[in-house]
Amino acid sequence: MTRRLLLALLPLLLLGGLLAVIVRSGPADALRGDNVPPLERLTFQRVALEPGAIVASVMNDGPDDLTIAQVQVDDAFWTFTADRGVALRHLGRTTLRIPYPWVAGEAHVVRVLTSTGTAFDREIPVAVETPTPSLRFFGIFTLIGLYVGVIPVVIGLLWFPFMTRVSARGMDFLLALTVGLLVFLLVDGASEGFEAAGVLPESFQGAVLFALAAAGAYLLLEGIGAWLKRRGRAAETGVGWVLAVLIAVGIGLHNFGEGLAIGSAFSLGEAALGTLLIVGFTLHNTTEGLAIVAPLARERRRVALGRLAALGAIGGVPTIAGAWLGGFVYSPVWSVMFLAIGVGAIAQVVGQIMRQMTREASVARALATGPVLAGLFAGFAVMYVTGMLVG
Image (cartoon, rainbow, N blue to C red; front, side, top):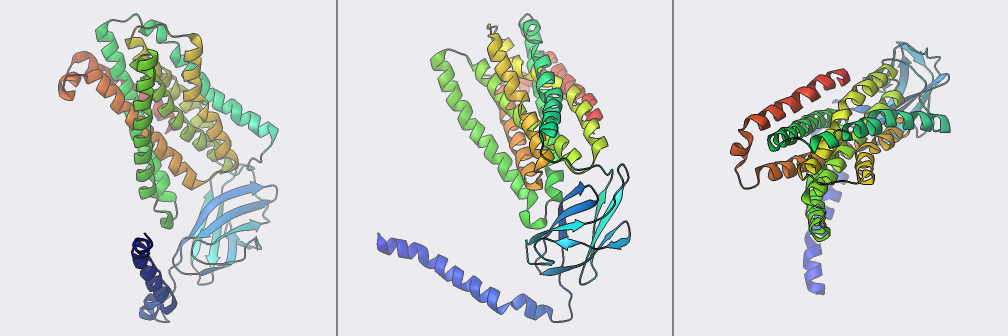
């Protein structure tokens, strides 16, 4: 046993020794010479506005050390302080506090210059004071989450009595409509996720992080779905209830990302964007309740009001938590992670619904019917039109 452990550790020890030699000798620095300037990449992690001051959190995303020399605001040089100093190693962070009399509602540009003269800019489109944790702001973000996530999803659940009375062809249409809604959310979430990943510092490899998190969420929910189905059969609750729970979970994760977007919009000083997102998401999310109850309606079972309320809470309440997190402790890395988890969850739910719709038939034959095609296109159209208010 000891010998096998040593054989396993030997390559790791040799690799560690090789890395130590590379770091100590610096072959890349020797090739570059003394006349080549360092490769500098400074990223803004967050810019907060306090009364009479701009607070910018920055990180050295480049491979070489850099030193912050000067700060400009609106093309004028300003004094500043750095809580962790101005010399930053790779992935080093510091927070710059700039005493500047910013004007509410106006645009400002913060520029950081390094000792080599390289400039890095961050624009503040609409200046508003950054929210600080308080009961008032917690209440405001809670209300926003209710407007955007909880109430619209609950309104969508009210279609359940109508859906239990439609014909079999009508149910095919509604399930296909659900798939159309979710596929739109999938594409929209993936687009937002890769866009957020592109803003991350290159060292974090945002696209890879997004893809792996989405795949992990998909596989995790596949396992949870199989477990819930076994429990559902044992308790005779039906496959429809399991699928409705999975849809609610996927939508809840997606709505958590929406809450992050709204909270961070206000946190980053983009108040107009936040208001537009509230209006757009409120209309956008009403259709999500329809998607949640469609599998239940197909089984023609009676569902207790408490269970419907639980599904609405699973799908809508995460919006509140997302708004809190985005408004007070916004992190671009966590935004990418949660958007990816939402995309993976929705992809898993779409697969579950498609398996339920096709059953023994092939996917092509199941989709090539009038009600299904009409439902798919209707789902795309509804989400596209309501999504225009968000975009």
